[in-house]
Every structure is written in C-alpha cells, then in structure tokens.
Amino acid sequence: MNDRDELLSALECVLFVSGEPILIDELCKIFDITMLEMTALLSHACKLYEEQKRGIVLHITDESVQLVSNKKFSYYVEEFLQPTQTRTFSQALLETLTIVAYRQPITRAEIDFIRGVRSEYSISQLIKQGFIKECGRKEIIGRPQLLGTTDKFLRKFGLHSLADLPNFDSLSDPNRLTLPEDDDKEIIESV
Image 1 (cartoon, rainbow, N blue to C red):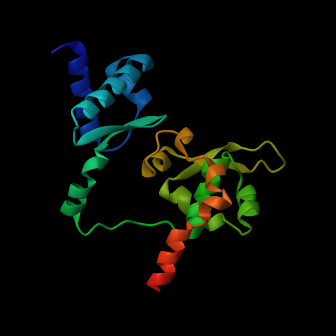
Image 2 (image 1 turned 180 degrees about the vertical axis):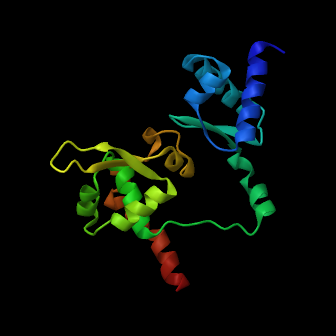
Image 3 (image 1 turned 45 degrees about the vertical axis):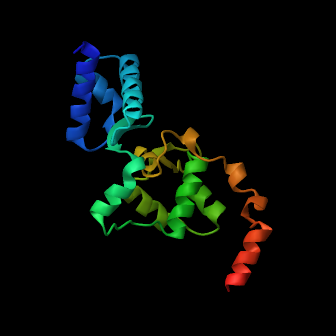
C-alpha cells in the first residue's frame, strides 16, 4: 500500500468515526498536509468512490467534508428505516431561508421588506436549527446583524457551494409556472 492509499484509508476512517461534517482545515491539521494536498486527496477519493459505485460518497462543501450514503441507493435505506419521518419547512421558514440564500449577507429589516411581513420568528428558528447564522454587521446606523447561510444549509439541500443554487432569474420566470396545454386537459378530465 502506498502513502496515498494509506492516507485515504485513514481519512475514510476518521470521517466514518465522526459521522458529522469535519472542517477541511481541521483535516489538514490532523494529517499534517497542506490544503492543496488535502484537496487532491478528496478529489481522488470522490473519483474512486464514483468509479467503484460505492454505497458511501464524500459530500464536500466550501468548508467541510462528510462521509454520506450514496443517493443512488436511497430506496434501500428508506426501506430499512421505514417509516421515515421528515421534518418539513413551513412556508414562512422556506421563504426566509430562500431570501437569505440568494441575497446574503442580508439584514432582518431587508428580509422583512422583501417578504412584506415581520420575519423575526422565522429567522430565530432558522438560526436555532443551524441553517443561517450571523456573518457580520452592516456598516450603517445601529449596525444591524448580517445573516448568511451555513454549511448545514448546503448539506441539507445537497449543495456543495452557493454557486450550485439554481439561477434565480430562471426560477422567477412567469412562463415557467404555467402548465402545458396537455397537462391542463388531464387535470380537467380527472376532476
């Protein structure tokens, strides 16, 4: 076994034992390697897992890495864990989280203005759940806190970075929200 294989095995072991995301900087310290070397090792591991069609894969974000189950086999995991219970976001939480994701860093007042209602409860819940965090203060009178998304947000929505967010303009295209004519007929006929 060469050094890279041994390092990869040790990395896999640490990630498995952790069960939680580990900061990439922390991994560099643990293995006493540079960020460049760690990035190359993680890239090699991702490629290896993909080639071997493994049941586990690495989920890498801008800040952390985690060993997770491969989505291709989610059916089997769901069967094993039945009944699955998923916690859904309320409309208010989802709206607030979307605004923060696309407009960050953003203040509570700016979120309230965009939504047209007060958002303090939604913001407090999203902070409590770890999906958004304070990421500084705005340099205006009162110095309100600026909010941004967290690494947990990226993991929850299967994103590796904010660049992976869908294009906002294409999502807000009104033509995208209309059903094709054939779908309309099917809906009417089924009623």
